[in-house]
Amino acid sequence: MGMQVSGQQESQKKLHPQTMCPGFGAMRILTRMEDTRVCMVTDKGCMYGLTFVSQFYAAKKSVVSPELMNKQLTAGSLIENVRETLEVISQEKNVKLIAVLSLCISETIGISEDMLPKKVGNANVVLIRLPSYAIGSHPEAKDQVLAALLKRFSSSVDKKPKTLAVVGELFPLDAMAIGEVLQKLGVESVMFLPSQQFEDIVEAGSVSACAVLYPYYKQTAKWFEQKSIPVITGAPVGANATYEWIKKIGGALNLDSEHVESEAQDQKLQVKAVIEKFPLQGKVIIAGYEGNELPIVKLLLEAGADVPYASTSIEPSALTKDDETLFEMLGTSLQFRKHLEDDQRAIRKYMPDLVIGTTSLSDFVKSLAIPSVYYTNIISTRPLFFSRGAQMMLMMIQSLSQKKEVYKRLSDFFDFDKKI
Ligand code: SF4
Image (cartoon, rainbow, N blue to C red; front, top):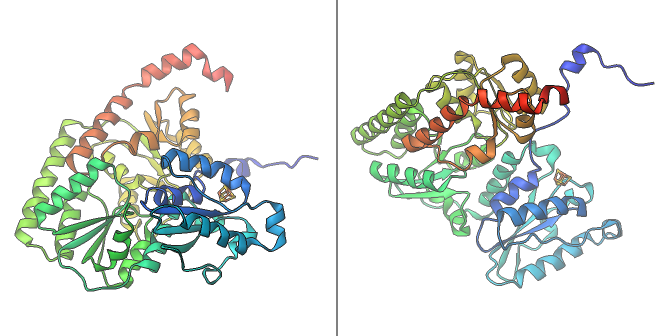
C-alpha cells in the first residue's frame, strides 16, 4: 500500500538540495593552483563526475586517483595504493603540492594524515577531508580547502604593515578594481586568496589584516583570527557597503583616516550615481547556490527593487549575521541551506518579475512565463564590485526585468501550461 502524504507534509517537502558535490568546490580551488595536483581518494562513481569538472575548469590538468574498485577497497591495500599514486604524481615536472582529497565513501574517510608521507620528492602532501554529509555545500568546501592549506603551510611570522589578504574568488576586473582602490588608500601589498601561487599560502600569516568577501569562508576567517589578524567582513557592493568596507580596511590597517574618508566618500558617490542612473522596479528573486548571493540582494534593494525572498546553499553563521538583520528589516525572507522546493514555494507565493536562480529553478520559472536566468552564468561572469560592478549588474537586471511580455509570448506559443 502506498504511503499517504498529508497536505501539510506535501507543502514542506524538501527533496532536491541545491548544491554541487563538495569535491567540485575543492577542485575549483585546487586545480587552478599552479604546480599543484589532486589525488582523489574515492570510488569510481565520484571520479566519473569530478573528472569532467576537472577538465572543464582546469584545462590540461587532470585529476589522478588510485584504482579503487571493490577489489582494492576490500583487500586492505588502500593506503599502499595511495602512496604508490603519490610517488607517480611526484615524478611529474614542477609539482610542489599534492592535495589528497578524501571524499564521501566510508572506506576512505578514515584515512589519517599520519598514514601518508608529508612529502614525496619535492612535493608537499596534504590530506583534505570533504565528506558531503559533513560539509553541506560546494562553496563551504572551498573554505575547507583554503583553511586546510593555511593550517598546514602558513607559519606565523612577523606582520608586514599595510598588507592585506582579500579572501574570495574574483572576476578579474574586480581584482583589478580592488587593487586600484586599495593602492589609492595607501595599502602597500594585497594578496588574493585562494591564490594560484602556493607561495601566497605560505606567506598568508604575515598580512596585517584580512578582508573576507563572502560569508562561506568561516574556517578561513577563524584561522586569521587565531593568528590575531583582524578580519573585515562584507564586500564593496552597493553605495553604503562600499563606504563601510573602505572605512573598515582603513581602520584595520591604521591608514590615514582623512584620506580614507575622502576615498570612501568618493567611491560611495560613484556607486550612488550609477544606482540613480539605473534604478530598478518590480519584484526580483535571487536564488543561487554559490554562497555570494547576499551582497547582490543588498545592491538590488538599494537600487529600488522589491526582493521578497532570497536563498543560498550555505548555512547561517557569524559572517551572515549583519545581512540577516538588514534583510529582516527590509522585508526580504532569507532561506539558508535551500532546497528546490523552498524556492518553488517562494515563486508561487510572490510571482516575481525576474528570477536569478539555479538551472532547475530557472526551468520551472520559465514554464510560468516569468523571466529567469541561471545564477552562475550571469553573476560569476561579470564584475560586481564598486561602481563598475554596480553598473554591469543593474543594467543587466533592468533589461531582464522588462522581458516579461517576451516570456509570456513564448509560453503562449509553446503552450507551456498544458505540458507541465
Ligand atoms: S558520493 Fe560524495 S564525493 Fe562522490 S560524487 Fe557524491 S557527493 Fe561527491
